[in-house]
Image (tube, rainbow, N blue to C red; front, side, top):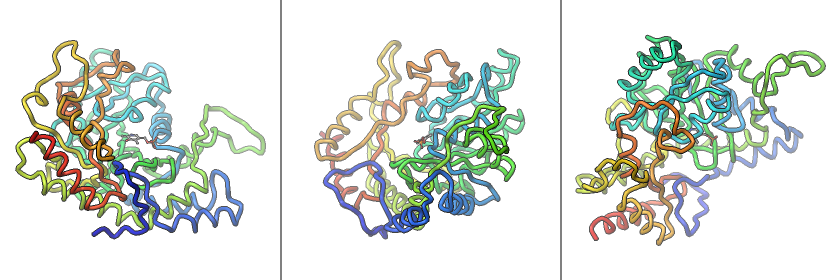
Length: 399
Ligand SMILES: *Cc1c(COP(=O)(O)O)cnc(C)c1O
């Protein structure tokens, strides 16, 4: 059974609903009692210190208003601007790449390999070479993502990035607590992203953080996050800034959440194990598991694919990019029982917003979108819920 206590069991089953440890109110009350109901304050400092300890590797962390703000500020700190190109993973949530547009830069999308579902090192190198030949300029950053918490082949990606001397921003928003060769994801590149949105591994009701390489970079990022105000008794500005700091009240929630992060991680991994055992050797349903023993995902969301002739076929030219029939049928069957599920991310290079962006893809992420499904995995999901999901899915493919 789960170690998590104080679960407010609701009738509906969600993918990953926020769950409070019970310790959050103590820190929030402290903020109120000391009148630190503002951005910055003791909870922010303490939360950042806890995140630095959690990330390890001597990294410095800045707590921010969202994970998207963290991506944006990483790009600002790297000096990305109008006319620049940023290499992004196509198979991701739009928050990984939209900040490039905020800055007038162009995302260049790279497809995934089908083992981790993350950016394919071979295609990454093709993309870098092609863009350098075409534009005469190097891409300004590479933004690999750890989809659903699954580590990427980060050693290979870093080797390529280092060879071309291009900084890496690891989007680890979904991978809080995931390990690659025993090291936290988000600590390999120049910058790493954390998200504390309501549906992520831990929440601050909405928030994020940027993992920085050193204290000087942290200071610079804090400067951009607080309107780029120069150290003067009045307001002097030489650069454009943002209002992106986390509030002291939200950081109090984060401190409470950090008291049970180990329980959350154990819970997500145990649920993944239940799905994996149930679908082991199944003809049609295949659980997405780490392809290497040195990868230890947090299993933020457990994901499956349906392997049928229809689900595996590529989209026909001009065909609407939609999940295949069996995915829709499974979603409907779960929804009829009050259970939430969701297709995988629709690749960015297939989004109308990004139809003109260069893309180095081979159909792998389209195929994943066509045949994949995210299953309930969060701290409010019980063993009984998982068993119901398994039974409904098996029933659905057999009928
Ligand atoms: C959630 C998420 C983000 C953004 O985080 P927010 O805190 O919601 O702004 C960025 N990238 C990925 C891959 C995410 O899943």
